[in-house]
Length: 506
Ligand code: NAD
Image (cartoon, rainbow, N blue to C red; front, side):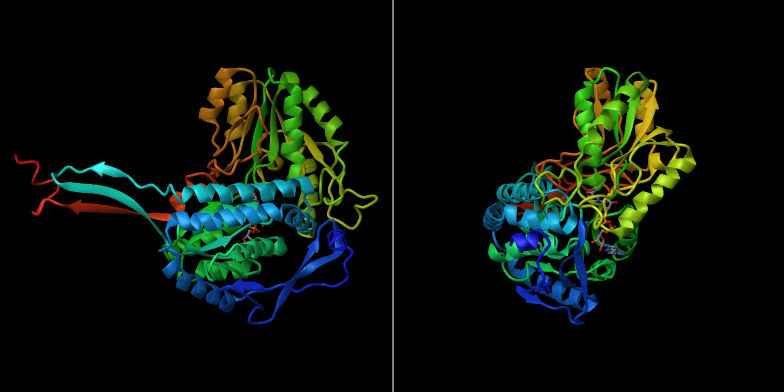
């Protein structure tokens, strides 16, 4: 095992899809590779490049399993999810090590990722006893009105690579707790992590067909979105892919939840605790190498404390230890792949052309233990104005753009002057400003005196504007996405009662 985690194993494994409770190759036999982004000669394995045929088999299995799964009492489904949570707890270290090897973030971060999945499983268990409807008084005599929740059917789950266990579970656990069955496609950049999650599902005794795994890239995801028997689609990824999926799904009236990109602001006012704010910027901007949808990518700072904040961030960020995330002292891992490295690198030119200053970093990180990976230095842009591309576009790397403002009102205006609206943070000791920020920042999440990252599994998660389409993951609200409301009227009067008519004689 140690050999495998350190990337020195020589035998390359081939992995399979999981359909109707069986591990299977793709029909075509085609595969793709997953590699360690910190040590690119380390091949994690080969995974099925699934076609529409494989997707159809998975959807058929899910459709069949739905017939009995929807009838199992929700508290019993909750008990199965408890076992899933227990097994994830047992395997937490093992899975986290494998995730770090596959997608690069340090071990302490992948452990957090798995813990979020565990929390989501236990929360789902409790929801098995809380799939509430409403009972509401009727306007008629001897009549009883209520709403109940029903599962939808087969749900297609398509996820990004950066939270390769937590994010799929935000979708999968509420979906199956509610009585749906699922076809899950992990990101092609984290197929092994997705497979390890599904192995837990199998070992916990989730019945065959309830959770199906199909590996592959965009075309596999597209086949899920196109399939007429997939009643709901939950997607996490870029806004660009989300738009494509939304138009296909809308044409066939499928329910769809989209969680997409961000360009998250952290406002630091002149009355803030600057040590706290600095720590928040380091974790928010450079944690997960800036590859979080909630990463802090804009620091909007009051002019009185601008220079001091910049100095403090540079002093701390330049000490961050880059390396392979399974090494004990690593604080920041690599970018996910060559494409991401090229994209982040290209923004250095964009920054220069726009007139921003690269105050720290700006280059691929090299040196001992780094040359074989997609490492990039923690980077800080200063002299950024709100209209520059580096202030507006999601870079998805360890890059923070600093925008100087003169007042709190200007800070809010800059924070909102953006197409995205996922997370936000405000550092201030002034309670009035804190409440104004809660009310006025256009985002799905606002942290007061905390960084833009730090979602908890039992709280609703999602964004506004180009980040989302009005649904939420996490917490109680995600259960609204995975259930349909049925309204039920029970008339026990023994006669015909006509609503809106019989009670209102003129
Ligand atoms: P991506 O859009 O490239 O891919 C996401 C998923 O969509 C992958 O599984 C991919 O295979 C699949 N896909 C690609 N084309 C498809 C198509 N035409 N039809 C169906 N599926 C398709 O995103 P990524 O690079 O994996 O992830 C990074 C992005 O995800 C960033 O923009 C980040 O902000 C966002 N993200 C958002 C959240 C959130 O909750 N808001 C969380 C994590 C990541």
